[in-house]
Image (cartoon, rainbow, N blue to C red; front, top):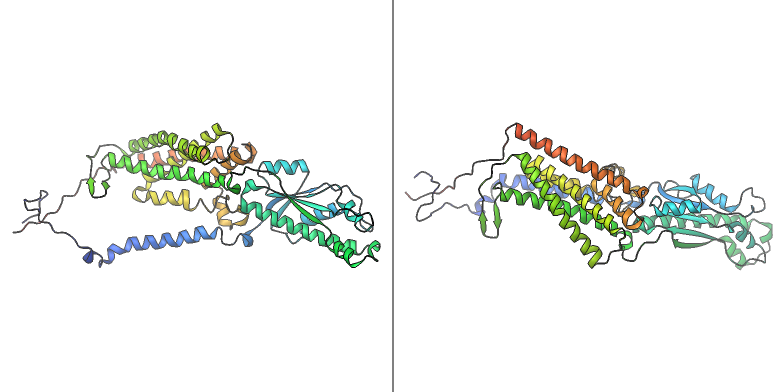
Amino acid sequence: MAADSTPPADDTRVRARAAALVRRPKLWLVPTVLCGLLAFLLSLLYMGGIVNPNGELRHLPIGIVNADQGRPLPGQTTNLGTQVTRSLTAGTSDTSGKADWQPLTRAQAQDRLASGKIYGALVVPADFTTAAAALTTANATTRPTLTVLTNPGMGSLGSSLASRITQQAAQQASLTIGMQLMDSPATAGADATTRLVLADPVAVATQVGHPIGDHSGLGLSAFYYTLLLVLAGFLGGNVISNGVDTALGYADNEIGPWHARRPTVPISRTQTLLLKMAMTAGITVLTTTLVMIATVGILGMDASHLPLLWIYSFCASLAVGLGVQAINAAFGGIGQLVSMFVFIVLGLPSSGSTVPLEAVPGFYRFLSLFEPMRQLSVGVRAILFFDARADAGLTRSWIMIAVGAALALLFGLAMTRYYDRKGLDRLTPQPSRLVAQKT
């Protein structure tokens, strides 16, 4: 009997069995290749950005403040503060290549700490040479001190790397100064205890150069808040896209054992995209508000400039959502996978929020020039930690949000209009249900 689209009374059907299907090589091919490729790429991309930060570290911006006003030691032409500064900036210290030492005044250093332009600073005080010289006399009261300033707003790892480099530089300076003091004729008759102090004369004090709140995740709240915005835009965009396709009859609605397919609504690809983007804009108002209620209102995350933070969060999440809709419209079924790589997979290791960009391979520094998560995280960090200063990266973030939203609109509409002009409609006939009857 020929196949019929209407089930017979006894509804006897030919059903496939898993045991038979599992032996079909073609059924395995695409999932196996895609899963293997995804696992391999995810491993390379995620671990490649964090596996060796010390080995990849290059030119971490750190300030050096020389306020030393003391007279040079006997036999020297410059005071100790100038010697320390020259050693660091000339690249003759052990930190050469790891740090980009920037000679600054104390006011300049404080300004750059407060705008997120440097990860820390080393301060040589005004009495540094005088205190060091006093160690060779009976008038010694305190050891000369170098101060390390940290910047926790740049992230716990970035601040830690800068602190370690700065302390290493201070220790090296102490040993160099100790050699000069030991060679001084005034120490020729010093006892063993005094000579031990003179061999390593400099004390190192660590202070927070630009403090942040206790509820800031040790400087990581900016990163995780940015991740929330990206995930809200990414997941929300995909949920909206699937929901619209289901409501318009272009996708099946299956919940547990229940399955339904709505009548197909004749609508062009361009109009579908416009509908999805409009819904994304409306729903993002809700998701942004709920993100702030949860993080700031309930969890107590330290945040100032709340109206600005809400507006920025809305625009950032919306730009991601629009990008997701454009990619889904252009690539169809694999659009979710493409957008996952664009916004999540490539964005996380190149964001510079957990591992400084100066400590990742060059490939990730290249990605950071345009990857959305990097652009958004800089703006969030500026609002949360650096008083919403424009020069802390907020201006650039606003520009990149506008550019990203414009590109999403242009790309999405260009692709859907092209498909519409080519007559590539989404209206497809539904296959008949194959039913076999007993003859």
